[in-house]
Amino acid sequence: MDLRDICLTMRQEIDELEKIVHANLSSTVPFVENVVGYVIHNGGKRLRPILTLITSKLSGYQGRASLEIGAAIEFMHTASLLHDDVIDSAPMRRGRETTNRKWGNQVSVLVGDFFYCRAMDILVRHGDTKVLRVVTDAVTILTEGEILEITKSNDFQTTQEDYLRIITGKTASLIGAACQCGAILGGVSEEFEHSLKRFGLNLGIAFQLVDDVLDYTAAVEEFGKVNGTDLREGKLTLPLILAISRSTEKDRSIIRKALITDNTSPKEFVEVLRIVEECEGIRDTIKMARGYVDRATLGLASFKPSLEKETLQRIADYVISRKM
Ligand code: FPP
Ligand code: MG
Image (cartoon, rainbow, N blue to C red):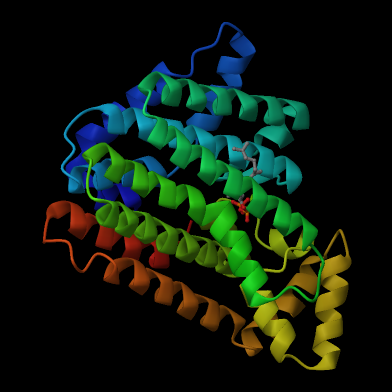
């Protein structure tokens, strides 16, 4: 099931969100608008702003600032992906050519900066320094997570702890902030705010674990990205970390060779996938993702029943079952 199907009752708000997204992306330079239009009309899931909308409602907020803050968080996320695709030399995202492939690295980096500035513009206009602090801290942690990942690339000694630290930073931090901002808008207690932040962090960790499984197993048409990218880029994600710790010396040397080769061949990828599957790397990564989804939903146990709580639970289930 698609995220928008889960959020059918929020259709009107999601349409409003799209309007705010567009209203904040105009530029006096036509080329900027051209690229920005390509980037933002790419079938993105809008997971983060949807979470801000739901968590703000769950916290009793009824105003429109959740749409603005959600849009700002989506822009931060978009900025990070435009930069990430340059770092990863990624050719495809959401079923289409990446900006770096279509217009080059310089355009991708600079349009990423444009999204970043527009996000800051919204947050500064909103004027709540607590929201500004939460988002700024999350983006700092996200950047540190990405840098940590680079320092660990091709590193056979990468541990599960290193990996969890990387994905908590690069993915979960902003999802946690999206949920925390909803709580801040509602003016709830610190405990309530902390629970929603934790929900987002656990959900974000599960989201990246599933992403890293899909990089090995997904059909490209569904995933919208080229699979095998992590291995090609020398990224040790959990399926591979588990395989390295459980495989024979012979299989480990096959993995090592595929990891350090820049142009891993399809045959080498299939061979590594075989080892990963034999070592239960896929199964156990999904198992761990389920564990984080369970933690996320258990953290909502003390909230009284509501449509918003139910939607958060359904989003958590979607994160495990998604194919893209
Ligand atoms: C995707 O990981 C990458 C991220 C979620 C974070 C990237 C962060 C930066 C580049 C720091 C710069 C930040 C800003 C705000 C400009 P992935 O490569 O595993 O996922 P993918 O398969 O979707 O590319
Ligand atoms: Mg990437």
